[in-house]
Image 1 (cartoon, helix red, strand yellow):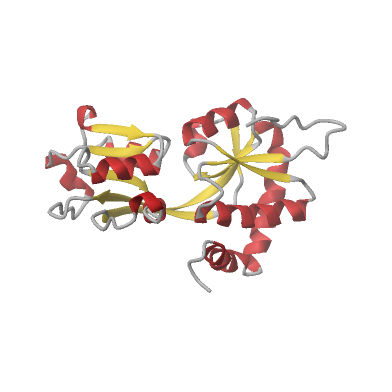
Image 2 (tube, helix red, strand yellow; image 1 turned 90 degrees about the vertical axis):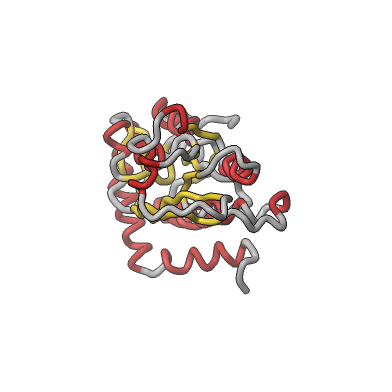
Length: 238
């Protein structure tokens, strides 16, 4: 994205850039925008969401080229000591495996170890990557950049299972290019975890302030209102 942030003296009007991995016309983007726009408004800081792939987002945040990432799991901090976790969860994410094979049945993750399935996950989703690597050999495990690509490969029969954040696949299937597709289904949900904002280390002093703001918003019931508002913006409800 052009115009990378350069927070410093005399540049208070420069937006605080948080990286997200979805496009503006998606439910998740709208939900995240509602939450963070209000939080940073309360903090008196101009705010901007910027869309990148997960891997690119992680690299930019680590370099300090963007100011933070909107949501990552708690353990993300272990592999990214150059980032500061905001100690208040912002979104709960469930992770699931999807299939387009009507005959494929999966009762538990351990069943993968004795299967011959070709499995894929979205690059940067560490929960999928780390979990699947326990059961699937490297020659049958691969990754893709985006959810749409993963879904297309399922439909084409090039993969047996695709792993992603659970809400992303049904949302991708709403796109016109997938109109009439009914074969893709959830095969197994295997985890549900809270996710947290992460900030570049140069913004460490902001982390407790942002945590307190998010906590207050939650107490006011906004975290219950915003999903409904995002659904209305998507045209999913009246």
